[in-house]
Amino acid sequence: MARAATTTDAFNAIAEPRRREILDVLVGGERPVNDLVSALGLTQPQVSKHLRVLREAGVVDVRDQGRQRLYRLNGTALRPVHDWVADYARLWDERYARLDDVLEDLKRDEQGDGGR
Image (cartoon, rainbow, N blue to C red; front, side):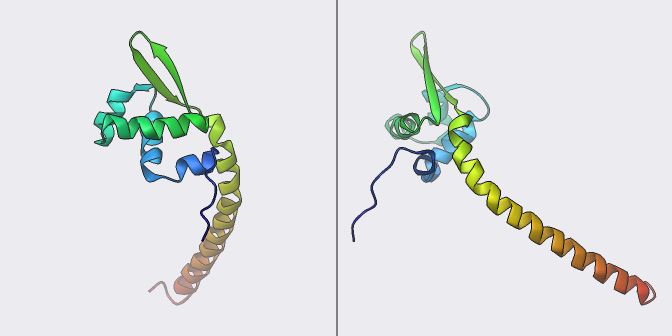
């Protein structure tokens, strides 16, 4: 079976769990790579490899500050992921609303039976 071509889009970038963990740390603000290494318990080369993929997809930006390179989340690059998930969120919201209706009906029925 042929392997799917690797892309550099946000979906591919966040498909790997460790990359999502990096984003979870960066959502709190800009961090140097050493902070990411400490926070995630990975080696520096592992974190750098994941950061390279995230940078190529535009999901993180980097800037130099003295001798450090600081990484930060670029939320705009995650917009296609948000838009795709939003359709499913509407579906879940509709199902929860129907469940709320069923629960309200059950509650009324129970209270109609003398509030047992």
